[in-house]
Image (cartoon, rainbow, N blue to C red):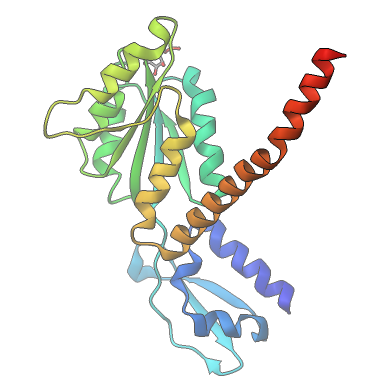
Length: 238
Ligand code: RP5
């Protein structure tokens, strides 16, 4: 029975629902649930699933739920994929649902505009835009939504990415783009996560845990650095 409930929790995450949507009392009965839980289609909510469960305490009424917002990733070209992959990996590690597209601000301007214009109603909470060279994609998306847009300037064949950095970061007043470092895919995802975590305590806890793990890794290196230097010295003088 415990396995069924573990499976259930995993499914909840895959579907984009977040653990924080469930009360401590509900979590407490999960291990005891005789039949696990199931998701039922709710026609009132545009095809979205709504949660219904059975517990030892008897049938529970349908309850409110929250669904984690998705992150939209748009890249100007599939040549930006290596940078985008760094963002995707972080989002996967944090179990944040995301959708990725190749829409160019200049080659497919209409698709880029339509994506941004409909993103809020489609359940996106943040948009990440990755582009190189005259990188106007993030600004073009931001012009068509009031969702936060995070720009990743991608390094192109010239100027080590300075061209894309300035194109992305130098947005005129009124249409902001939060710009991360050149090729900063991982930070773009982490910033997106932090934005979603404003309203999501479970996600905030995961980000805190990641910070602790990152700090522990640095301190482990600190503990070993003396020995590493000594080894180097010995080898150098051998
Ligand atoms: C930008 O131009 C893209 O974002 C990409 O970084 C760059 C080059 O695109 P491709 O010629 O590789 O398609 O629009």
